Length: 421
Image 1 (cartoon, rainbow, N blue to C red):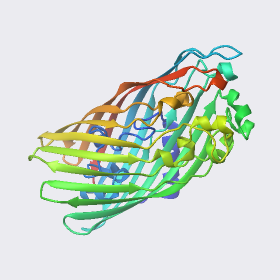
Image 2 (tube, rainbow, N blue to C red; image 1 turned 135 degrees about the vertical axis):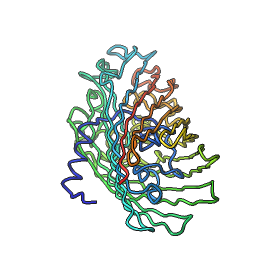
Image 3 (cartoon, one colour; image 1 turned 30 degrees about the vertical axis):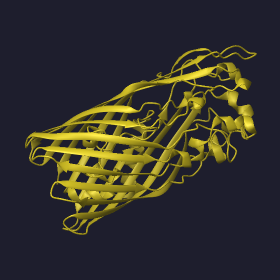
Image 4 (cartoon, one colour; image 1 turned 90 degrees about the vertical axis):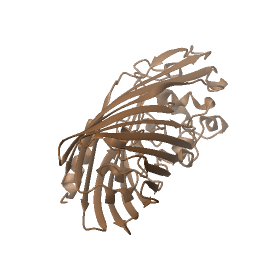
């Protein structure tokens, strides 16, 4: 593999350009990585299927052979908010708000694996981690001084070079280095400037960028001839700060990427049928800019301060079940279902109008057809069921009281092509 720094940078920038990613599925993490995994509700800890396996469990690349995977996902979220019972001296924010002025997004992915010898494999995965995007043509914060359209745009791209070692016929270990690049913009939040330590660093400053490094470790074990297990862990990534939004996010613009980890099982039930299950944990509560409650604003902690207010998200656990069935050597069908804890508390819905990541259940389907012995064409479809989170004590009386209710559903369709090298 000969990808120099310029090539990697070009791929990264292309991904960012094509992909102003929308609010993803499990909080702001994607429900899976790789077209095959995406068609199976995101399972992958114990079931590596392509070169994007490194994005879930780096140990898995010893099992996929030499291959190159390219894919793209069309992603269409439906996000909206409703405010009721609000009354300020300047009027009421009551109404229904449509956050879909930007309707759909393209999310590219790239994976490459080379088996160096019988024991060692080298891989590279480039993929998006979801992000947050809302685009309200009608500004929900206009009564508080918000001007123009409102919304946020957070995109994250990961580059993960990986090395895996097959210690024996039944056990593999892998290590990946996660380089994360983030881009963020906020618009229409002028009303929050008076509550910030840096009023000029709250809104309408264009796109700002940050990056950081982290570690991913994994193990795959073949417990029996038909049952395998996988475990993987990704460290928290401490990124550089969004300096242009130092007055919006806690700790002067900090927006780290949370630690996440999980375990999975895969069972070869018959020669054609494979069943798989994963449990994944995402520790949102360990990142101030995601976890701090907006209530601390009314306890003397301004926006942008070390412990300033933000989204109030909690840790979540995701459960995934999936199956694949080989109809014949050239055609495999897939399906999966996942469900997750709710990241938001009912008292945190008002500020989360900007990031209404409330969906919890996903149904997925996928297929792979091999037009030639060394090529694969894969597709998937995923539907995140509509979920509404109704606020309870969500708008502080100092802001006029009332409640903010959030609603979201999602549809995505992906296509990938692979070459076995």
